[in-house]
Image (cartoon, rainbow, N blue to C red):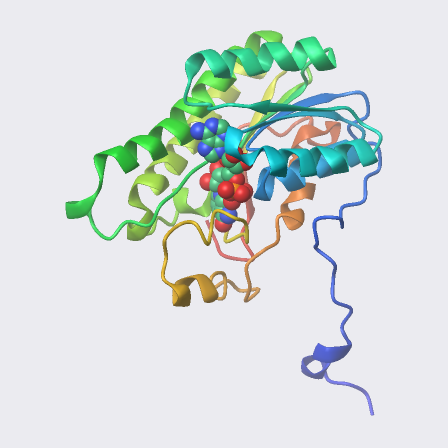
Amino acid sequence: KQEQPGELGEQQPKPDHGEDSYDGHGRLAGRVALITGGDSGIGRAVAIAYAREGADVAIVHLPEEQEDADGTLGYVRDAGRKGVSLPGDVRDEAFAGAIVDRTVDELGRLDIVVLNAGYQKDRDGIETLPTEGVDRVFHTNLYGMLFTARAAVPRLPAGSSIIVTASIQAFQPSPTLIDYAMTKAAQVAFVKALAEELGPKGIRVNAVAPGPIWTPLIPATGWDAEKVESFGQDTPLGRAGQPAELAGAYVYLASDDASYTSGSVLAVTGGKPL
Ligand code: NAD
């Protein structure tokens, strides 16, 4: 008997979205990428994919995550590319400038900047919003992005690409992530404004807006076990995404395939509308 579509479940090939799953085609050959938050989660998947597409990569990460950075760079070197680890804090203006200089010094040029370092924490209402916590979210997600972009732009040749990891939270803000959602909305405004400024120089600026992606950020957010357990199940695809399922979006936006795409927001949300 012919199988009904609904009965295919068990027999459907299960796509492999593990961190070793991205297969490259040399689409970024000869380019150099700087990825903030490149040791972990989404940034790690992007670093691996970029290396497999032929790019050398510098990854910026918090110093306490050196082991993760070394793991990511292992994949980069296995792909035959050069990798540089840049430990430090993007909230520090001097550091954000130094990472751009070090990338160009050690890897020779800079073509792709992925402004991805980010931080979020569960909030339980406006009345108890902690000033210090909000400072960390604002400074990491906004100043970190601004300082790095400001330092990078003078080093970017025509044809280069800046990509910001925004979030579905920019468009569908949750009260439990109120300060984080504000930063993500601001990042989208930043992308649109910067795309207009840099268009005449041939530099493209875009955002990726991920939906729920299973990364180390999620269990660390402070949600209760039930919320973590059900993370992503309210998407049309019924599950959270894996970081490797975002990699193609970042490769596309960095590559010449996206040569006429700037100021855009690419949703990778498991079907949730922005
Ligand atoms: P993650 O915790 O795995 O990665 C965060 C990265 O940011 C780490 O590499 C960390 O070292 C770096 N970082 C944080 N603060 C920093 C600082 N002050 N200086 C330097 N580096 C710093 O989390 P992730 O989920 O991969 O997050 C990456 C980006 O994706 C963030 O901007 C996040 O807001 C965004 N995002 C995540 C999701 C999700 O569901 N995971 C959804 C939408 C958007």
